[in-house]
Amino acid sequence: MIHIASSRFIRDQEMSCDEPVLQSRSSDECIAYARLLGEGRVAADAGRLRSEVSVATTAPVRLAALKVDRKQNQVEVLSQAPPKYPGAAAIARVEGPVLLEFDLMPDNQISNVRVLESVPEEIFDQAAIEAISRWEMVNNDDTTITINQRLEFKLDD
Image (cartoon, rainbow, N blue to C red; front, side):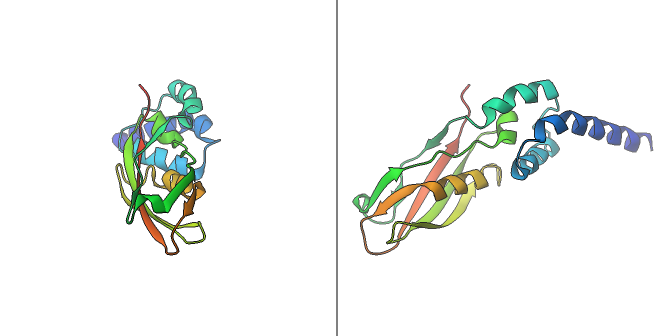
């Protein structure tokens, strides 16, 4: 019984420390943070969290070269909006790749953005999908082109 009460007290303390930090974060970031907290990869230190939240969404994301299922010259990249580094992942200093696949339609629209693989799973998926969806490209072919793209979420040391 004492163990249950102690566990509850610790959890309540952690949540009270986290609440001021997470109140301005999106629900996806809060969910990612909760997952990381549950895995023991986040220390519930409110002072440290507050100081790192401002850095969280500005961390760089590295882009691998586009992998197109046809000749590279059929795709012209106009702009590649960088993904926002999820705040909870930045706070926890979590890094990892996301491999995506998407279709570039003949009318230059990007569609069917899907995650093929991500490590850790689901932490960076939404940020990667949203970024790819904002990219601007030109399809120099009259058919749909399938493209694979790897995004590497990595914090500067």
